Length: 268
Picture 1: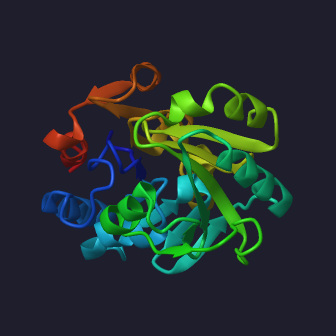
Picture 2: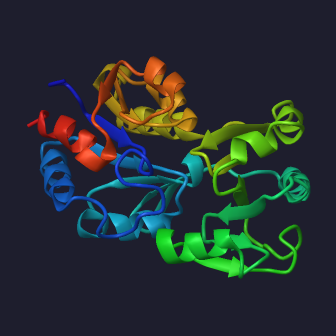
């Protein structure tokens, strides 16, 4: 791995537990990533989280890293937006309307600026604000009260998102101009067809003239697999879904045991 020039890592389930905020990441991660950046290696956190949440988690080294947010729909360096893909408003509104009809589920809508929902007393709202540290705004109707461009619509259930969206929602929208990705047991993310984590990685490779062979990727879920296809070296963490482990070249230890950190330290 001596020729690695770009490292991209998922966050939830890969670096920390779902919803964990500042303080959950072992401080040695900051030291190691800072040293790697000093050696000319770029590091990008690639997550369904919004910029504000990733910024809080990586605060000590935030000026060192890139952030692919909202499932790869946006890439930021600090407060600067480098890359963005948005859903056409008519498609976003149709997805929102259908997502509301999925039994037992809640809906989260993300823009490059903040996230939106329609119920401030919901389990999802408190989890996103209190744990993830999201900048959330409650509106009466997300199909008409959101003025910014929409980058992601997510369907949420605390542990049955895949099951509850399977009967009709996923089959319908998989045929439309939307990319669907499962992110853990809680989320089904709907992003532009030409967006996603793989697209974000490809942008970084092309922008900085980095080859797949010079790219190292870490992940644990379905939405990370498209990054594996574009990386010369890929790791699934212990605890990843079986199909993710099969797609990765290697497996490393779990986030609880700082599996990614152990691999990064080998790059010194």
